[in-house]
Image 1 (cartoon, helix red, strand yellow):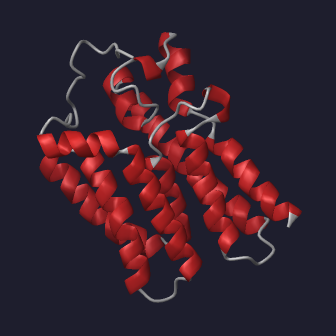
Image 2 (cartoon, helix red, strand yellow):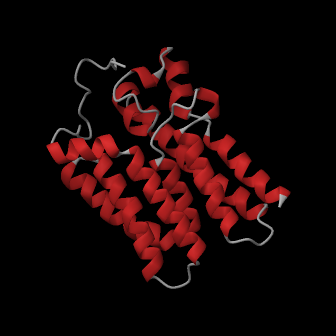
Length: 207
């Protein structure tokens, strides 16, 4: 039990490392949460810092999710739930990071790492639809929501996956929809920023 709790706590602490905040501070001396959309993630990094830093942030955030699930596997003592809970803890850390006053991102890149590690084939199937959506609409938020919504469905339909992974993926989906609630409202109004667009107002976020 102690090792299982440790896995979840360690995963949260790992998730709390906000690479977009660290990179923006190192490269520009800015707090990225005060610029663009105000989100500490890869999409806002692309908007503010450019493609190279955005790709690096994306990869590192995905790796956080992968690492968290493996921490859960190593310390699970055979429990099916601990890898999923560790992944959820990493996403929670990304969204509400301990080291950065609990102001983080929306957790999609970390969720990709978690879901690919927990359920590779369902995540890849959902990813195809998500990527097509982004290519056709240029709405990253819409593609992200499609990914987290379809992954639990594919886990349920495809054989070989435990209910703990299904319920874990469903919790991740709910997390994502909650964090994207303002994006959902903007999508409904046709006001959501498209991939490659600059934030109105020159980049500085009004808080």
